[in-house]
Image (cartoon, rainbow over the protein chains, first blue to last red):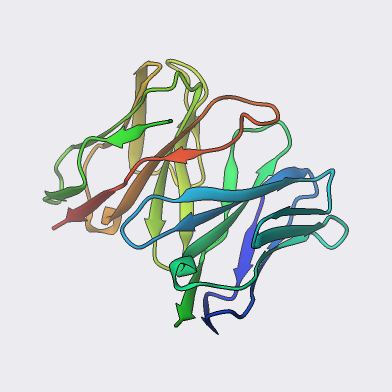
Length: 112
Length: 115
Protein backbone atom coordinates (compact mmCIF):
# COMPACT_ATOMS: atom_id res chain seq x y z
CA UNK A 1 0.00 0.00 0.00
CA UNK A 2 0.85 3.66 0.17
CA UNK A 3 3.10 5.22 2.80
CA UNK A 4 2.92 8.95 3.51
CA UNK A 5 5.57 10.69 5.58
CA UNK A 6 5.11 14.23 6.86
CA UNK A 7 7.66 16.72 8.21
CA UNK A 8 8.15 18.51 10.48
CA UNK A 9 6.04 17.18 13.33
CA UNK A 10 6.00 20.64 14.96
CA UNK A 11 6.60 24.06 13.47
CA UNK A 12 6.73 27.38 15.25
CA UNK A 13 6.74 30.63 13.27
CA UNK A 14 6.31 34.31 13.98
CA UNK A 15 3.12 35.96 12.80
CA UNK A 16 3.60 37.24 9.26
CA UNK A 17 6.25 34.66 8.38
CA UNK A 18 5.74 31.79 5.96
CA UNK A 19 5.29 28.15 6.91
CA UNK A 20 6.08 25.10 4.80
CA UNK A 21 5.03 21.53 5.52
CA UNK A 22 6.33 18.67 3.39
CA UNK A 23 5.01 15.22 2.62
CA UNK A 24 6.40 12.34 0.62
CA UNK A 25 4.51 9.36 -0.74
CA UNK A 26 5.66 5.99 -1.97
CA UNK A 27 3.19 4.80 -4.60
CA UNK A 28 3.40 6.51 -7.98
CA UNK A 29 -0.21 5.46 -8.60
CA UNK A 30 -1.44 8.06 -6.08
CA UNK A 31 -3.21 10.85 -7.92
CA UNK A 32 -5.03 13.00 -5.39
CA UNK A 33 -3.46 14.87 -2.46
CA UNK A 34 -5.64 16.77 0.02
CA UNK A 35 -4.54 18.83 3.02
CA UNK A 36 -6.63 19.02 6.17
CA UNK A 37 -6.53 21.48 9.05
CA UNK A 38 -7.60 20.39 12.51
CA UNK A 39 -8.01 23.07 15.13
CA UNK A 40 -7.85 22.06 18.78
CA UNK A 41 -10.90 20.03 19.73
CA UNK A 42 -12.42 20.25 16.26
CA UNK A 43 -12.81 17.96 13.27
CA UNK A 44 -10.33 17.95 10.36
CA UNK A 45 -11.44 20.15 7.48
CA UNK A 46 -10.19 20.23 3.92
CA UNK A 47 -8.26 23.42 3.14
CA UNK A 48 -6.77 22.68 -0.26
CA UNK A 49 -6.15 19.74 -2.57
CA UNK A 50 -4.22 18.98 -5.72
CA UNK A 51 -4.43 16.37 -8.42
CA UNK A 52 -1.52 14.69 -10.14
CA UNK A 53 -2.13 16.48 -13.44
CA UNK A 54 -1.13 19.87 -12.01
CA UNK A 55 2.03 21.07 -10.31
CA UNK A 56 0.71 23.89 -8.15
CA UNK A 57 -2.53 25.25 -6.79
CA UNK A 58 -3.14 28.43 -4.85
CA UNK A 59 -5.98 29.74 -2.72
CA UNK A 60 -5.29 33.15 -1.19
CA UNK A 61 -2.52 32.63 1.41
CA UNK A 62 -2.37 28.87 0.94
CA UNK A 63 -0.64 27.01 -1.85
CA UNK A 64 0.24 23.40 -2.55
CA UNK A 65 2.98 22.17 -4.86
CA UNK A 66 3.40 18.68 -6.24
CA UNK A 67 6.53 17.04 -7.64
CA UNK A 68 5.46 13.72 -9.15
CA UNK A 69 8.95 12.68 -10.11
CA UNK A 70 10.26 13.04 -6.57
CA UNK A 71 6.91 11.94 -5.09
CA UNK A 72 6.55 14.81 -2.71
CA UNK A 73 4.09 17.60 -2.14
CA UNK A 74 4.16 20.62 0.12
CA UNK A 75 1.81 23.06 1.81
CA UNK A 76 2.84 26.70 1.86
CA UNK A 77 1.15 29.26 4.10
CA UNK A 78 2.19 32.87 3.62
CA UNK A 79 1.63 35.82 5.98
CA UNK A 80 0.73 33.47 8.81
CA UNK A 81 -1.80 34.57 11.41
CA UNK A 82 -2.50 33.22 14.91
CA UNK A 83 -5.68 31.58 13.62
CA UNK A 84 -3.51 29.41 11.36
CA UNK A 85 -2.34 27.60 14.49
CA UNK A 86 -3.59 24.02 14.19
CA UNK A 87 -2.53 20.51 13.24
CA UNK A 88 -2.20 20.01 9.49
CA UNK A 89 -2.48 16.60 7.81
CA UNK A 90 -1.50 15.66 4.30
CA UNK A 91 -2.99 12.64 2.56
CA UNK A 92 -2.64 10.65 -0.63
CA UNK A 93 -5.17 8.57 -2.48
CA UNK A 94 -4.36 5.75 -4.84
CA UNK A 95 -5.83 6.07 -8.29
CA UNK A 96 -9.36 4.69 -8.49
CA UNK A 97 -9.46 3.57 -4.88
CA UNK A 98 -11.39 5.05 -2.02
CA UNK A 99 -8.63 4.64 0.54
CA UNK A 100 -6.74 7.66 1.81
CA UNK A 101 -3.36 7.46 3.51
CA UNK A 102 -2.62 10.23 5.96
CA UNK A 103 0.62 11.72 7.18
CA UNK A 104 1.32 11.86 10.90
CA UNK A 105 0.45 15.56 11.19
CA UNK A 106 2.27 18.84 11.77
CA UNK A 107 1.43 21.04 14.71
CA UNK A 108 1.81 24.63 13.57
CA UNK A 109 2.12 27.34 16.19
CA UNK A 110 1.95 30.96 14.99
CA UNK A 111 3.29 33.31 17.65
CA UNK A 112 1.73 36.78 17.76
CA UNK B 1 -23.75 21.98 4.12
CA UNK B 2 -22.59 18.43 4.77
CA UNK B 3 -23.23 17.19 8.25
CA UNK B 4 -21.53 14.16 9.76
CA UNK B 5 -22.51 13.34 13.31
CA UNK B 6 -21.22 10.80 15.79
CA UNK B 7 -23.30 9.35 18.59
CA UNK B 8 -20.99 10.31 21.45
CA UNK B 9 -18.22 12.85 22.02
CA UNK B 10 -16.81 10.96 25.01
CA UNK B 11 -17.12 7.34 26.12
CA UNK B 12 -15.67 5.42 29.04
CA UNK B 13 -15.83 1.64 28.86
CA UNK B 14 -14.34 -1.28 30.69
CA UNK B 15 -12.04 -3.92 29.25
CA UNK B 16 -14.03 -6.69 27.61
CA UNK B 17 -17.16 -4.62 26.98
CA UNK B 18 -18.76 -4.48 23.55
CA UNK B 19 -18.70 -0.94 22.25
CA UNK B 20 -20.78 0.62 19.48
CA UNK B 21 -19.80 3.88 17.80
CA UNK B 22 -22.35 5.30 15.41
CA UNK B 23 -21.88 7.73 12.55
CA UNK B 24 -24.60 9.37 10.48
CA UNK B 25 -24.29 11.59 7.40
CA UNK B 26 -27.12 13.52 5.84
CA UNK B 27 -25.85 14.12 2.29
CA UNK B 28 -26.52 10.77 0.62
CA UNK B 29 -22.80 10.03 0.41
CA UNK B 30 -21.74 6.65 -0.95
CA UNK B 31 -18.50 6.29 0.96
CA UNK B 32 -18.04 6.19 4.72
CA UNK B 33 -14.88 5.69 6.74
CA UNK B 34 -13.74 4.99 10.28
CA UNK B 35 -10.32 6.24 11.45
CA UNK B 36 -8.55 6.30 14.72
CA UNK B 37 -6.35 9.24 15.59
CA UNK B 38 -3.40 8.85 17.93
CA UNK B 39 -0.68 11.41 18.70
CA UNK B 40 2.23 11.15 16.30
CA UNK B 41 0.48 8.56 14.14
CA UNK B 42 -1.99 10.71 12.24
CA UNK B 43 -5.20 9.16 11.04
CA UNK B 44 -5.22 5.43 10.44
CA UNK B 45 -8.01 3.77 8.49
CA UNK B 46 -9.86 1.01 10.30
CA UNK B 47 -12.65 0.17 7.84
CA UNK B 48 -14.50 1.82 5.01
CA UNK B 49 -17.67 1.21 3.06
CA UNK B 50 -18.55 2.25 -0.47
CA UNK B 51 -22.14 1.03 -0.45
CA UNK B 52 -24.82 -0.36 1.81
CA UNK B 53 -23.82 -3.73 3.26
CA UNK B 54 -20.37 -3.40 1.65
CA UNK B 55 -17.24 -3.04 3.73
CA UNK B 56 -13.52 -3.21 3.23
CA UNK B 57 -10.70 -3.50 5.71
CA UNK B 58 -8.40 -0.58 6.19
CA UNK B 59 -4.92 -0.70 7.62
CA UNK B 60 -5.76 -1.61 11.23
CA UNK B 61 -9.00 -3.69 11.26
CA UNK B 62 -7.97 -6.12 14.01
CA UNK B 63 -10.31 -5.97 17.00
CA UNK B 64 -12.97 -4.01 15.08
CA UNK B 65 -15.97 -4.77 12.92
CA UNK B 66 -18.41 -2.52 11.09
CA UNK B 67 -21.98 -2.47 9.94
CA UNK B 68 -23.69 -0.48 7.21
CA UNK B 69 -27.35 -1.45 6.98
CA UNK B 70 -28.48 1.96 5.71
CA UNK B 71 -26.68 4.36 3.43
CA UNK B 72 -26.57 7.17 5.95
CA UNK B 73 -25.31 5.15 8.92
CA UNK B 74 -21.97 3.44 9.51
CA UNK B 75 -21.28 1.73 12.82
CA UNK B 76 -17.96 0.74 14.32
CA UNK B 77 -18.02 -2.15 16.77
CA UNK B 78 -15.38 -3.11 19.27
CA UNK B 79 -16.27 -6.71 20.05
CA UNK B 80 -14.27 -6.83 23.27
CA UNK B 81 -12.71 -3.51 24.17
CA UNK B 82 -9.08 -3.46 25.23
CA UNK B 83 -6.97 -0.68 26.74
CA UNK B 84 -4.96 -0.30 23.52
CA UNK B 85 -8.17 0.78 21.80
CA UNK B 86 -8.25 3.95 23.88
CA UNK B 87 -8.16 6.61 21.19
CA UNK B 88 -10.00 9.30 19.25
CA UNK B 89 -12.28 7.78 16.62
CA UNK B 90 -13.21 9.84 13.60
CA UNK B 91 -15.89 9.04 11.07
CA UNK B 92 -15.83 10.54 7.58
CA UNK B 93 -17.92 10.42 4.43
CA UNK B 94 -17.42 11.31 0.78
CA UNK B 95 -19.78 11.50 -2.15
CA UNK B 96 -18.18 8.94 -4.44
CA UNK B 97 -15.40 8.47 -6.93
CA UNK B 98 -14.29 10.90 -9.57
CA UNK B 99 -13.16 14.45 -9.65
CA UNK B 100 -14.75 16.78 -7.09
CA UNK B 101 -16.35 13.87 -5.29
CA UNK B 102 -13.41 12.77 -3.20
CA UNK B 103 -13.53 15.35 -0.43
CA UNK B 104 -13.89 13.68 2.93
CA UNK B 105 -16.09 15.32 5.53
CA UNK B 106 -15.33 14.41 9.09
CA UNK B 107 -17.49 13.99 12.15
CA UNK B 108 -16.58 15.66 15.46
CA UNK B 109 -14.91 12.53 16.82
CA UNK B 110 -15.51 10.20 19.75
CA UNK B 111 -12.87 10.09 22.44
CA UNK B 112 -12.95 6.56 23.86
CA UNK B 113 -11.27 5.59 27.11
CA UNK B 114 -11.05 1.88 27.93
CA UNK B 115 -10.26 1.14 31.55
